[in-house]
Image (tube, rainbow, N blue to C red; front, side):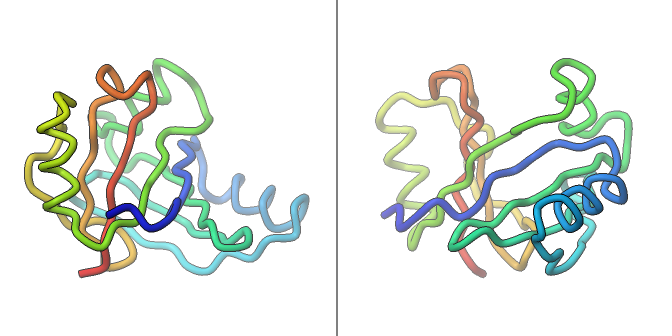
Amino acid sequence: MITKIDHLGIAVNSLEESIKYYEEALGLHCHGQEEVESQKVKTAFFEAGEVHIELLEPTSPDSPIAKFLEKNGEGIHHVAFATDGIEAQLKKASDAGLRLIHEVPIDGAANKLVAFLHPKSTHGVLTEFCQPK
């Protein structure tokens, strides 16, 4: 079951420049950075109330984030929903006819299992399910 919006993923060209914006202009604090090799991305995390903001910088030209930036420029990349049963959530989505990018969860940032739904089947919004390992 979905329990809350976990985070908003925002594609950026430079973590260094973007972190300065979030800290200096918005007054938020970066709570950590991490590289997620499976997604070819470096991340930085902020909190705004109960919702996290995940900045995503590509580490390779063939990463999904690099492709997104090429096509769309910087901006919101995905909405992530926390779930207490990621496999069941994927089955529910599949049973509803949604296109799964990941049929089984993969390792994500912040010690979580993650899986994505294709935006062509979710009204244009790349949707992520995440659950602590």
